[in-house]
Length: 338
Image (cartoon, rainbow, N blue to C red):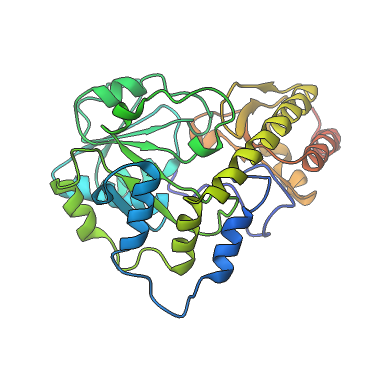
């Protein structure tokens, strides 16, 4: 793992027309959220305490408003809670074997020693979990042990739970109440360019020293008007109905996309979310530039600790056909003999 920022999505050439490298909802942007964004008034600051927003999020999840922590983005919260743990004397952060790179970046930035599975997690001052996991989109096998075990705070990254297409969550409501839940609805709403997130503290942590440090470390107005509009609309019935309908479409597209990848000779790994990983028949880095020239981008999994694999967000059939044709052409190019 290098210090480079490695993400999917747009690059120096802009957004790829057929972008499999990011995991936003490929059905498109949620109409209810788009309407809320159009109606938002950016001429004024939001309430700096986000009182109404926190109450709305709390009602949506059925928790006390004092448990809601507003964040500028998931990455901002990752860095903020890492800083708060370090300020409290924490020295170690535990990560799954394969995980989002900002967990490690934040730990290193705040001087936390990184422990990675299969190392035991209980001595760690901060623990990171994710389900469906990234990059694999699979259940986290030790998640119940995290929720019921001891040790430092455990943060469960819920980025892909709203985009779950298969399987069931490992934790019940009582177990979720024992961990920090980090939510980033912009992916599910198909609007990743709007940066907005929040966390739900464990039931017994609302008045904890950690919560106080998180508040002290927060910038003023972490969310602008449009971030507030997205989160408020996300809680509404119209957005949730649209999301449920979009999941049906994504399930169909996912089955079709796996079939396309298998027809290319790729080994597709199982996963429950709107993305999956595959071992390609030829090294992706060798053909990445040729594919990008055709408007196609995949997510190389080497930075996740899975060399030889790519992660593919589920995309519409037209993009799947472009991938099939583009991969065949790039792999057959004289510049890339195999």
